[in-house]
Amino acid sequence: MDSAPTFDVLSQPLPILLRDGKTHANLTLSAIEAYAWNRSNTALVYGIELGLTIYALLIAYMCTRPEKRKSPIFILNILALIFNTIKAGFAAHYINGPFLELYAILASDFSRVPKGEYVCSVILVVCKFLALLCTEGSLVVQVHAVLATTTARQRLWLLMATGFFALAAVGCGFALTIFSAIAIMHTTVTFTEAKVTLAAGISIMVSIVFFMIIFVWKLGFAIWQRRRLGVRTYGPMEVLFIMGCCTMIVPSKFTPFPCRRY
Image (cartoon, rainbow, N blue to C red; front, side, top):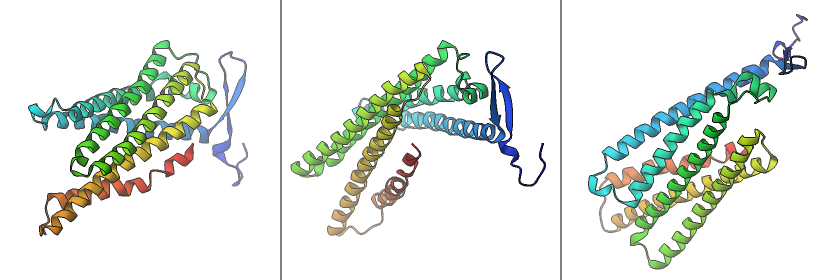
């Protein structure tokens, strides 16, 4: 091996034998390192998501009064959290399953993956869509409740706009679910699926940002009306408005950047 300072040790080939026992394939240390880094980080994300979703589910159930548990908003929120919990659980299983074994990923050989793993992966994408469906439905119902004090014309136009964005997000999410299920069963990713993934990500991002803008705007408008009536105290409404701007509006400035990776 060349020990010169210019030699890149991470790019040196590591030969392996493929399934037939004869064909050689070369890997690199950098590819193995990137694989390990991506797998560990993804597992960390899904583990945190699973824990936080279970925590949010318990808090939402315990902090809601019994008479409010039959409301559409509560039911949709609980269903969204349940589906997201199932999705995160299957995602954590996927990260540690045979689909992401080192040989399967680097050699693109998924022949050793049992059929049950394909079913689990399809359930994952279906639960992801169902969580999206319940989330968008909950947001539409919440907007309808928030706009109860606005004029009929404003309420009509805003509900039409929110309905359009919600349907666009759900439609793209449904298309992505179909393409993802097909790709899972055939263990291939097509150019069309990549485009649908991008469209779904953008539509979901835009719909959520639009809903958040409506919520924060309505809260700010209510504060402005209170100021006109002479209420100058700094209360819970102002706190919610400031926190809404910090946790809903400001993060939306950075959401387009991950889409560029597709």
